[in-house]
Amino acid sequence: MALIEIAHVQKAFGPKVVYRDLSLSVERGETLAIIGGSGQGKSVMLKLLIGLIPIDAGEIRFDGEVISGGSERDYAPVRQRIAMLFQSGAVFDSLDVYENVAYGLREHMELSEEDIDARVRRALENVGLSELRRAWPTELSVGMRKRVGLARAIATHPEVILYDEPTTGLDPIRIKRIAELIVRLSHSLEVTSLVVTHDMESAYEISDRIAMIQDGGIIFSGTVDELRHTDDARVRNFIEGNAPHDEDVEALLRSAG
Ligand SMILES: Nc1ncnc2c1ncn2[C@@H]1O[C@H](COP(=O)(O)OP(=O)(O)OP(=O)(O)O)[C@@H](O)[C@H]1O
Ligand SMILES: [Mg+2]
View 1 (cartoon, rainbow, N blue to C red):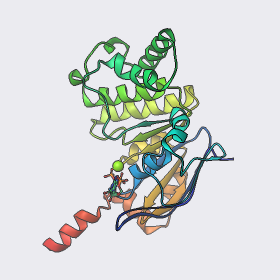
View 2: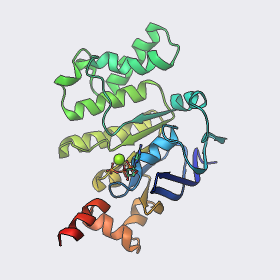
View 3: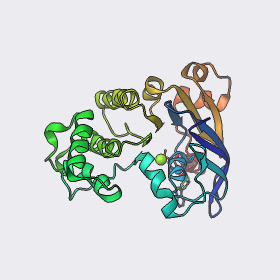
View 4: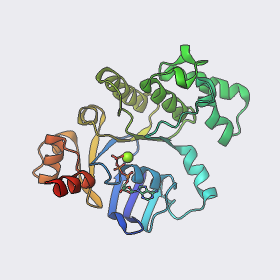
């Protein structure tokens, strides 16, 4: 049985249809990269999974149970098992690194201070930030802030980590480090990972499988090798040019040209 099953999900924001029919299964332990142009619904998909955005139709199952359509309260246990690393980073500048990581533990779990301390130290070690535990986020580089967010996610001991563009805005060396970190965590924590990324190099490096979102659904799902050999013109265009399929940009170009 798949750990996560998204079945025939539909989602629109007013007149803007994001998903006509989104279906995708995620196996326990796998690392699945999600690719697709800007505005195709990658971030929305992650948010649907943890109930931050409700779906209009269809069903989402997690570990055999239907979780879609639940109340905020129903989602609380789900959010303890599925951690999300947001595109924006979502690090609090008013808290130091240590307290940023401890925050999620204090907020949602009933743990002793000792347990919290042990988990925070472990998580910071895992992302290589032990030395910087008393630093302030504003003193940190973009890459380090992403690692703080990642430490916060893993400190809750999740079964699934959702990464939204973990490498965007980083230089090539730091992109490589984050990609390696994702792979290492997926093995050492035996976690299931969904990684939204624009960066094909990282996608190839980290994935067991890659799925591409376009035109309201999944248009491709397969291994790195299958992706490289696909005949689907839409997929080829995307990975070869790595041209962002951006409706707004295209409309601008049309009106300009
Ligand atoms: N809360 C919301 N309210 C209204 N529209 C939204 C909301 N969230 C997302 N959208 C719209 O849904 C579409 C998909 O957005 P989403 O953020 O998932 O794109 P994305 O694939 O993650 O793009 P990017 O690569 O730029 O991050 C976009 O047209 C976006 O404007
Ligand atoms: Mg996004």
